[in-house]
Image 1 (cartoon, rainbow, N blue to C red):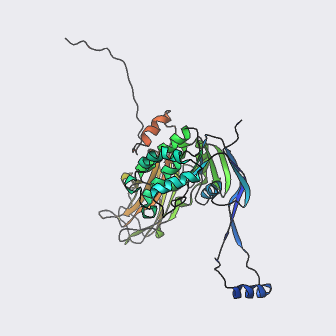
Image 2: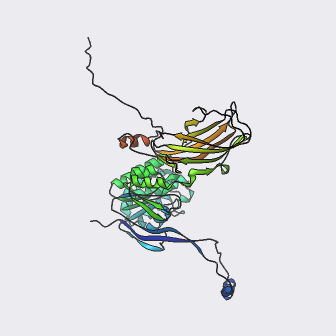
Image 3: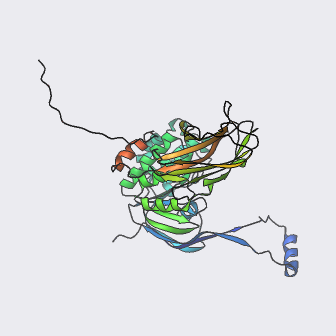
Length: 421
């Protein structure tokens, strides 16, 4: 049996938080030492970003790492890539490691793009002729040939990111570590990177991929580790790990709308709260295709609303409206007297392809424009499920710009061909 490419044993990382202490003069240090015995020392506050994390990744395996913000995902990758040291435990690596963790990591700002390619290759332990052999491929992928001899400190974030990923993916590391940094790029670049990482994984190299994009994890990885509060909550098949992540719920599923940007006079009503739930009533911001989604909208009415309408808009991640759900279309027509109300809308099936979608809200009275309108409330994720019995078909269209999924029934029969006279 081959030894694992990555092995973590009891990995833990503690950070000290609280007031930052600046530099002190020699006099201040001596004075503090002399008087310190008469003062109570302020207890240090610490937080464990990781706690007893142990898992193995086999050579050639693509493993995703998922979890909520603050779960310890990025800290884990920084320890594995030797950027920071663990407080406890150890990491064992077998193979040359390439990493793309943050924009700005690994490049020298004063060097040109060309020089940084060779520098990165040398750090990976590659010989010059190996780097030269892959050089043109790196430049073509990054699309920065015109600026190749310009110091990278003058690059835009997008240019910097394209070059950083091209170097990390093309200089043949045996282990590739990728963080959520891909979210910085545009849609075309993200698709290009996903394709390249798929090629890397299929080429027998080891990939550890941290992302909030659950569809990308399920597409690229056969296995995933779910982190919760710095601990391993689940380690197994990618689809099962995504299911565990969905059970955790998200804080952003329940919102106080007073903190968001409102449009409209708000003379008659004010949108106050919003929450998303699954079919069992649990808070959620991620749904499988054809799952039930329930939204609850809280509002305060300050003056009588005649034939009040409450609406919910679903848009693509780029702001294109996809569908509207309104209370009046479904027959809920009523006048609202001053007071507090909660409207609930149930969507029996989420008929959307995998991706990220955003929600907007409004409330209006008959014959008027929206009295209160919150165009960007929150986002939710749709992940693929075997809704047709042919999941590869879903993948084909889900990553080609399609957004709305509508089930259909198809029939075919053989007919006799009529002879032409």
